[in-house]
Length: 79
Image 1 (cartoon, rainbow, N blue to C red):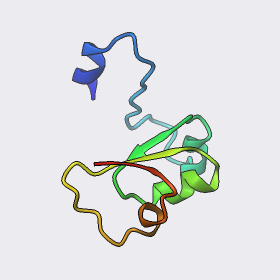
Image 2: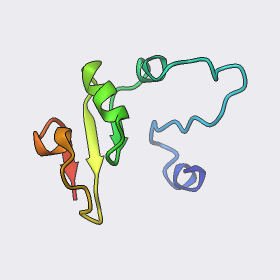
Image 3: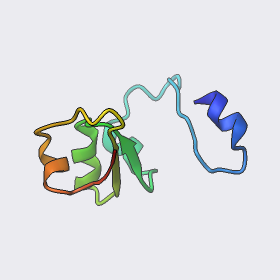
């Protein structure tokens, strides 16, 4: 991610690594600062949807089958 960020410095993408002292935060704490979630088929998508955060699911290999939130078109699914 750092390499991508170097090529696109004008973008507002923040890569969060392990931050000392923040291990106690829940996924909902992290999601509270997000305007969108980009994922594959992680259950984090469900948590983001519960928080009304838009979710983009990325499936370039077209390998995700039977994933309920993708099948029900709850996300913007990119293949």
